[in-house]
Structures are given as C-alpha cells and as structure tokens.
Length: 273
Length: 167
Image (tube, rainbow over all chains, first blue to last red; front, top):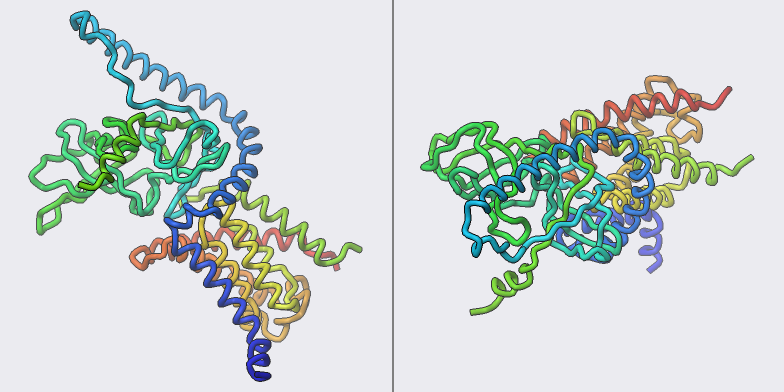
C-alpha cells in the first residue's frame, strides 16, 4: 500500500495533468451535449455580463457607420413595400387580405462577434425574457447569420453560419435547385455549396437564398452569390464557392426570427406513423 | 512590499481582461488573435510548485473557455503548457532553468527568446489543434499557430522589455 501512495506522490504532477487534460478533452469532445448543459448557461451569463458594458461604450464610436447601414436597409424595405403596394393595386379587393403572418422578428445587438475559430459562436443581448428560444434563425441586414443555440434570461448564444458542423438548406433564386451550404473553416466571407447535380446550369453571380426546408429560416432570405464553381472530373455534383452578402466580420445589429408554427411542424415531423 | 502571489493575481487579472476585451477583438488576417495572456504562463516564477501551476493553467483556460465560448480548447492548451513548462525552460534556458528571475537577468538574450518563442508556439499549436480537432485542417492549424505565435511573440517580448525590473 505504501508504494502506491509513494507512486501517487511521486507522479502527482503528471496525474493532475492527465486528470485535467481529460476534463478539457471531455468539454471539447462533447460539443453538442456540452452546449445543452448547465455549464453553457453559466458561460453565457459570465460572457454576457463581461462584454455588455464595453459593447455599449464601443457602439458610440460606430454610430455614423450604423446610421448609414440603417438608411440603406430602410431604403431596401421601402422598395419592398412599394413593390407589394403596386401588386396589391392590380388585385381584386377580396384577395387583398394579408395572409396569417407565420414569422415574426425581434431586433438584437451582437455583444460578442467571433469569426476566427473553426466553430464560431456569437452572443446577442436578447434571451428567454424576450421570448427567444433555441433553434430560432438569426438574420442580418443583408442575409442569414446563424441559429440560436442556448439562452439565458438576457442573452442568447448563436451558432454562426461560420460553424464547421452546421449545414444550411439553400436554393438558387432563379432555378429553385436545392443544396447544402456549409463553412470550410477558412475565409469568413466564403462558404461551400454541395449536392447541386451537374445537370443544373450554374453561373458565376447566381443568387443563393434560404430554401425554407427547415423551421429556422423563412424561404427566400438572401445568402450570397456564386463566386466560383468546378465540376469534378468524375461528374456528379458541383463544387461551388459562395460569397456571402453579409460581412460576418463587421456585425452589430441582427434580427431573431421566430416561427409561429414551429412547434406544430416539429410535432408533425416527430410523430410516429 | 506586496507579496508575489498578490501581484501575480493582479497581473493575471489585467492580462485576462486585456485579452478578452481588446486582443480577442483584433482579428489579424481574419483568423488570428494575438495571445497576450500567455505572459502569465511565461513570467510565472520558474521555481514555483508545479502541482499548483498546472491547476492555475487549467483554471485560466477554463475561465477563457467560459468567456469566449470555446469549449475545452483553452483548458487543454493551458494545462498542457503548464505541464510542459519545466521541459521547455530546461531546454531553452539551460543551467538557469529553475532560477526564479531567469527572464529578467542571468540568462542569455537568445535563451530567453527561445523560451518565450517555444512557450507561445507550443501553446498556440495545441490550442489551434483543439479548435479544429480534425487532421484534414492541419494546414489551417499550422498557419493559424504560426501567425498567432508571430504576433503574440512581438507583443510579449515588447511587454517583457517595457516592464523589466530596474537593476
């Protein structure tokens, strides 16, 4: 027995190292369940409380740029309203009733942006107190940003689209051909589109929008344009690089998108035959 | 005279705050963050008890993981560099490897630089490896480690030179 104690004391540094290393690896290896755990909630509360005051201070210095961006966004929305208005004038009165609104949005401020890691997580200043729940979509002024991952009372963490394991359903605006969009982990302004069969024509500059095949995003939210593409020699599927509309390195305000029918859709999907 | 561990605690707190609020927001080439907080691991007394130092390394890493939402990467890199430090100092500083003030006096400039460089490079390599956790991205891991090491090295050497105790 004595020799066991002696060995433990002799190699105590190495044993402590192994123990803590394993704990670190456990945290790192269980990415998905980790984020569901209480630890993630504590992390969110600490991180939010640390970053919030400094973000408020910092935002004063960006007011001019932010104003310019808001004017541009306002202009785009105004054009959209006018377009709808013109269409409505052509319709008979009885068909002008608005359809029941399926999606609602909530403005939020990014208090911590991240794009230099392989799995980037953003923090926003809206949480469960503001009706934000997991798996809500988050969009920016020019397109999609990510999906809500975890919430605390006043904050939420968002899996950025620059998150290596995340795949997003997307389609070409002109042809409605669907594919999966994911990040390669290198350039924060560029993503990869797969599952587009070679029989579909693709051109540089084609616009990509959300496919609406999930409950995260409504259909038709802009994503980006085709930057380059290749058709592998053995044919089959294109290798397409997409340039994003949103500058993911310079985000300040975003919108959380809620789907009123989300529970109903999920229940229907999970219902056993 | 303020006790060493109180001074160390204040210095570590300042460096961590600087790292989180300033250096984590400096995105060089869109993928690199200089790591000023490594000064804590580099400048901590070389003759200290390693058992405690490994625990300190882990908790600093865990704190950064919680704040930056990077599960595990900082903890693993922190605990590994704390464990490997005696080997690195023995290799780089030679006979002075366990002198408490080996970084401010007593060692050759080249030895000190080798020690600082190796500490940063090994930490950054483990950290990037943990972030990507995939050999398919080995080139990205190497690129990120080298760029991070280069800028962190300049920052840390500049800090060490500026705040060197007067002889």
